[in-house]
Each structure stands twice: as structure tokens, then as C-alpha cells.
Length: 437
Ligand code: SF4
Ligand code: SF4
Image 1 (tube, protein in one colour):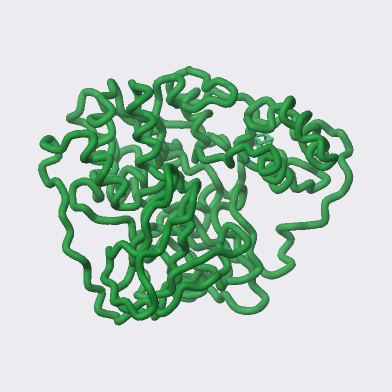
Image 2: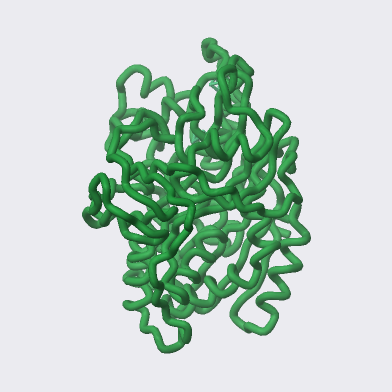
């Protein structure tokens, strides 16, 4: 059992009501709203217009630029409109609205059933064409990450099964119910990167997942499973690399700087399905928690959160607000009129005024945020500089190294909204948002 970083917090209520509940398919919604911005980077460019018929897997938007990914229809039916729609991450953006015909017809799929005959470039092309992005929440296009890893040279592939935020249980269920798919994806990654080792890192609070995965990789000499202590934010990729390999990712650097590539366990399954069966990423597993409902659900991308929550047994009407993602890093939305995107790990229902966002008070210089920051930063100072518009000083204090874990806000007695301010600072500094989960 391993952990190798200072700071962080031990969170209560790790499990939550969705823990241990098998993944259930959500009934097809009558319409889906599929955002063109499903990923980190540039939004995709639409390839369809109102009235066009689509099947599941029809490419409806093409990647635009180097960091982008194509988008596919998640239901069969007809394109109704291309509209500006609220986005789960905040604000709004262009989305393709599709009316379902209920037939659930797929396009014809072509994959490489014998993966040993597919060369690395072909595999990378398959991952790109399938629109696979990081499913741990950051939604960074996987083919871009893999191409960079191939160029840099990687000796260790780490699959992230830490799932260390409270309540979330989707990755846990994927590891238990589809350990073989997780392992197959890892084999693909190790092979195309010519890596020495592939390690699946799993929180030790998931012993059933550990045992299923050990069984799935027992015949592969280069693959293994490692247990992690349940300390938050163990799932942040730089901390994971340190825990698993002992190597420190340099300030401003990436895991590839120390010979590692980190992918989420769900992404591993999506990569395997993309390459072996040619199946695009059109659905994902989402944990729903709150208002008497809860569980883990396989959801077509673009499904309205209200449809999902209703099926889960909750009520997403007036008087309810949502957190899209986990309680530490998710985005608070005052409406259930947002669709599921590729990066949506969870939907947490809260009563309006349920205490998630109390009014912040002044900093009392208690130092708790400094003691607990897993990156060794001084969040109080960085926040102060961002608030004063001194982005240069915030940068000198390590703004770019912040992994947006939310620990500082969690421990702050004054309820200061550190992450919100830090993200604003990063935007002002032109620093990339954190993509390593
Ligand atoms: S400053 Fe960044 S890395 Fe440090 S605790 Fe806050 S959110 Fe996490
Ligand atoms: S935890 Fe909050 S109150 Fe304490 S030093 Fe940090 S910002 Fe200030």
C-alpha cells in the first residue's frame, strides 16, 4: 500500500450511496444535446445541419486544430438544431440537438480485432477517430496525450483507479464489472508506447476491484496492480506518478518528463473499444447521488441531467441545484438543464441553499491551506495576489503548479473559494487548466 506526498486530507464519507451499486443503462432520452466542447482544447466543428438523419456513432463534428476531438451522435434520429446551450462546466456553448427515433441503430463499425497486427500510428488514428478523451474529468483528447508520450518515450503506463473524491463510484464499478476491458486497454497502451511496465493504481478502499484486476492481469509479466492509501487527492496524476514510481514531475512539467503516462481506467476501456471494435465514445458511466436517488448509470453523451436524475430516483426540479463532477472539483450549476458531457464523472443533487457555497469571510491567516496543499504551495498568498491583479507574483508563488484539487478551500475556515480564484488567475496568466485527472 503506497502514498508518497505530503499534505492532502482524509475525507469522510468516501463511499456514499452509489458505492457497490452495479451500472445500469439509462433509457434513451427523447432528445440529446451534444456540446461541441466535449473536451479540453478547441471545440469541434459541426458536420451536420438541422434535418440530417444520424445513427449512433455518426460523426457529427470534426476535431478543430491540434488539441481537439471529434464528436459522435449518441442516439439514432434526426438533428433538430444547433443551439447555444448551458454547459456543465459553466457558461454556455454551441451544441447539436438530436431528436431520438428510439430505434438505437448503430453505424457500421470497423476495428482491428487482432490488435497485434495494428501498428501504433493506426491505433492512434483509431483513438482520435473515436473521439476518446480522458474520462476522469479533465477530458483531454487521448490521441494528443498518446502522441506526446510516443514522441517523449515512456517506460511506465499508469492507469488511474484512485477515484479519491467522496461519493464518486463510477470508476470503481468499471474496475469490478469490466476488469478485462481495463486490462485490454492497458495492453494496447503498453504495446503502442513500447513501455516496460503497466500498472493499475487502485484505492485500497476498493478491495473487490483490486482482486478483479489482479485476476485480469495475472498472466502478463509486465502488468501489475498497486494499492493506494485513501488520501485525497491521490488521483491527481503528478501525485500518482510520485507514489507509484518515486519520481517527481518537475514544476511546469508533465508525467512524460519522467517517463510516465497516466490514463484513467475508464479511458483505458474506451481506448480498447475504439481500437478493437472501432466504437466511438458515445456514452459513459456516471455516478448520481442525492435527493433519495443514487447509483451508477451508463448514459448516452448529451442526455439531459434532469432525465438521468429522474431515472436515478431523484428529483431535479425547482429547489434543486447540481454539482457536475465530484464534490471537491465539480462545477456548481443552479439548473438541471445541462447535458452530460464526456468528462462528467458524477451528478450530485443539492437542495438550493444547501450550504455548498456559503459567503466567504476574510483570511484569518490560520495557515491550514498551506499545511494541506499537496503541491507545497501557499494558496492564501496566491489567491491574495490574484485578487489584487498581481498575476506576476501569483506566478512566482507557483500558480501554474496548482492541480486544482480544492483541498485549500475544503480546509479553509473562512470558506474562501480558492479554486474559483486560482482558475481565474490561471486564465489571466494564460496557463492551461489542470488536465491531469
Ligand atoms: S493551491 Fe491548488 S494544489 Fe494547493 S490545495 Fe489549493 S487547489 Fe490544491
Ligand atoms: S485556510 Fe483560509 S483563512 Fe486559513 S490561511 Fe488559508 S486562506 Fe487564510
